[in-house]
Image 1 (cartoon, rainbow, N blue to C red):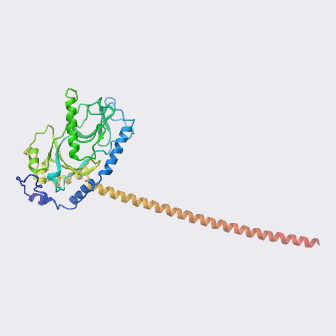
Image 2 (image 1 turned 60 degrees about the vertical axis):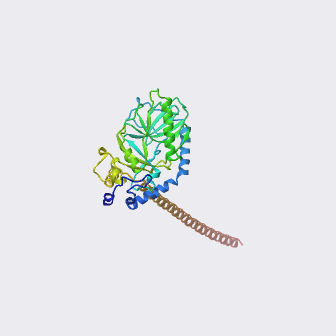
Image 3 (image 1 turned 30 degrees about the vertical axis):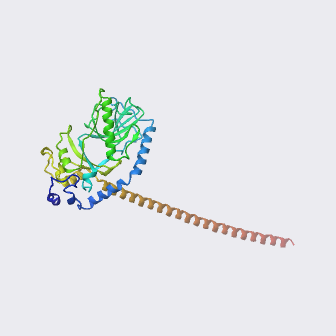
Length: 379
């Protein structure tokens, strides 16, 4: 924290320059280095991620049993029916921005996220389906999205959104974070900047075409700005039409990956002056240290970073491998013991058979001797 407090703010940084506090953050320790490495690792997953998304899309399109839901008839306390959960673990989640990328000013984009409920909006077969992040289908209604209403009802459209309120209704507004599918075309393997361009242009066209509809402007793209210090300072002066929850930092070349990833960073608004040296309006300021808040938050909510999740998965994989090896060794040992026992039984059987044969021979010899004696007596 002394390191953070000792860093000064430069307000006249030239356009395209790195963040004034970048040098001070380069050597914060193993945690930041791990995030840097994890960011590099995630960028290598593009091909595998694309194959996964193609498979997911196929499952969704081929599923003839998309669950019907009438919110007015559903008992919230009733057990939920078991069903295929194609939409579980589909969302992309951010990491705390503890390592500032060296290309922050030129290759990252800032997005202002509102308070609300994260959800996946899926337009398919004439219905707009709202899924929570655990894959639970919360609501169905008709919208102007392709596939989500009378427009191209057999199309597939998937948006990553934040609903304006915790209680999702058919009249709720949805702030769009990202575009996954639009009208049967997949965008998850496209760069973030490409996804944002198509998402904004498609929604703008949709709103123009349906300006007289009851649900026009139901889906709203969120404001963004480049991660230049002066651009972010000006951006934070904006009077947002919603309660600001936090700030998302997207890597422009990043693809959409269904897990927590350092390709997306997250900060609370009041952290900007301390971490990035960006001034903010007084009403957003808070007298608290960023690192202390992050540690307290992680401890209170059991939050893990993407690096910790990766380490936990690796630890579990190693434990499973040890269990598998132990089970294989036990099975091998049981097999060897079974074989040994079989051989012992076979040897015992052979011995008994041999003894029986010897006994039979002795009996035959005795019988032959007795017969010979009878013959001699007869003579």
